[in-house]
Amino acid sequence: MGDMTAFRPPLPRPRRVRTPLRAAGAVAAACCLTAVAALPAAASSGDGHGSAGPAAPAASSGSLLSEPGVQVRPNAGVPALPSGLSALSWTVCDVRTGEVLAAKDAHRRLPPASTLKTLFADTVLPRLPRETTHKVTDADLADLGEGSSLVGVQTGQTYTVADLWRGVFLSSGNDAVHVLAHMNGSVARTVTQMQAKAKMLGADDTHVVTPDGYDEPGQVSSAFDLAVFGRAGLADHDFADYVATATAQFPGGYDAHGEYVKSFGIRNTNRLLTGADGVTPYPGIIGVKNGYTTNAGNTLVAAARRGGRTLIVTVMNPQSGLPQAVYHEAARLLDWGFAAAGRTTSVGTLNPARPA
Image (cartoon, rainbow, N blue to C red):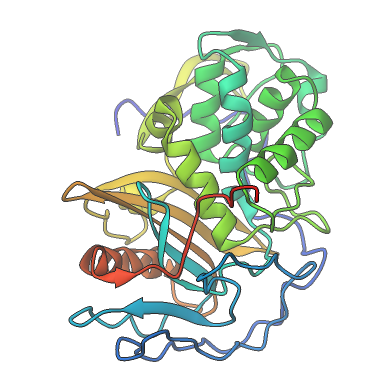
């Protein structure tokens, strides 16, 4: 992990966001998916949780993504989907083609937590050169949500844009997000641009209220949209570099004792990348972003490359209650995807619909 300094920034660093502002559906017993390999187009019944927000847009011709439950079109010899998946929604997608290989409630609108930072990066990263420097002001950090996850940005310190993006993607730092948003003009301007970017990408389930994924009423996305955001980001060299970085040094500042520390170590919170907390690093993992709030539960966008093929999976709010379930379920979906890729008929596409 390199030289991990014992510096602790004066800002608190809790990982839990405030009490939920609305229920995301009562916590229910884990929903076990039945084996569906023998079905030509499998669809499980709904799990009883109502979708947040208005109804999803109509699917394109041939798409099953607006149908409730699990959707898959396996051909002969394709293994069954993993049993016991408990996430409220998920997708398995091919990054190159945009094909969705399988999904559960792909357009169900749910709180995204910090996975929304993928859309933030898609929107803002191209606008700010990575070498640009910025001296942080009180105003840059004034609108942070209570209990936000933080990397340790300090007022009066100067950071490069690249420093701040590492703070966003490794430490899920809402403080770094807000500084970048202010560099981009303002938080409000950035939110408006993010909404426009989502529309341009064909991600119509997403409603943006905050740039960092912090819980706010009405802020929702979907497993489909998060796959779109992750896929779009991976096409950008800098995005791909940041999300694949396991550890880095972050510029320091003055610690609680008034002593100046040049830098301190940060580690990516994506356990499939780092192998932390009992999660086995996934072979071929290349990113992307995890998230957690009390309202959203655990969420994850994860991409891996194997045998010349890159897959991306999204997992939203597993209900099993098992430790690190979001990572274990994502790994099992990736395993299935690599075994099934090229041998299934897609159930939809991430590519935006072309105007008639």
